[in-house]
Image (cartoon, rainbow, N blue to C red):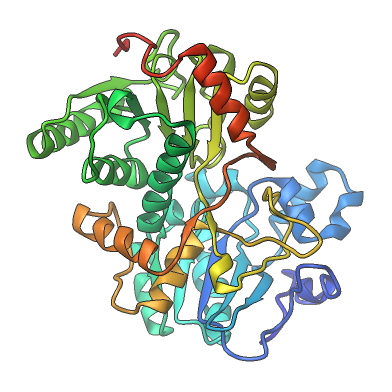
Length: 411
């Protein structure tokens, strides 16, 4: 496979990364799956292209718009080979209506053909690329012409979010039926999470669906659907129009806050009720990892968890790209993003369908069963790059008796 190049066609971007620890190179044989994602910020870009660290952030951001798709890593396992390709468009360009079309053109005209050259048959959409492509629908024809199956990864994301929450609850010895749960963001992942949550038993004490005021009609329709099918107490709440949580809002008065939105730092960590378990898969982050970790260390009264991380050690999966996973050491990391995991699951079990749009309950149940059957599990609980001291958090929670005592929620 050819190295990716700069826009002027002169300097090979992947060649620049040869000899780096994450092994950016052409595979010895065809890939099975490629995760197509993007640098979350200019820090991620510097991880991808270490020679950029000598330049300031503004320069890196400007240069980012002139780079072509980069194959950042090839991960070789006994049963599978997976690649991680970065669409080097800034997140702000992906969400900006004036620039997102150009990002999609680069994806269609450059990234997809280069993925096809690797021999891969499955492409997972990571980060904001699912939103960019309408969950893959806008690029489906181009992908099919190249022999590629596109999946958003959102079914595996939902399954892993729920499994992460259950892992934390079990570690804390906290029963879900005593817990009030807020799901913030009623997009594909948030809706899917609410659906799968209520397929499991026992049910939470109550469930709140929260989104922008403009999405209230959809949230109310979904709440009605879920209440009729499960009998669970479900309420609807709204953020401020800019996406921020109003003072005293539901996320500040719940036991469990599950979030999957694309608004940055709209939740203030210092306003969270003691005992709050956070499970976040937002892009960008909707609450500060630094603030959450500081509160977790100083007061040990919140449990802030990353939601999108999967333990793939059973596949002999080892990644060397420095994503800041808590288990990353000199031997690499056994952790994968949940969207890539969906592609691995599809490669291991070709009967699993790709995910487009909002996953229905039946599809989520298929992935839920396959996730356990194929040996996947959540990565060790972490906040940012820090492993959570779950035993001390459990002891502190028992000492304070915090579970289920945050009061009625303000909806």
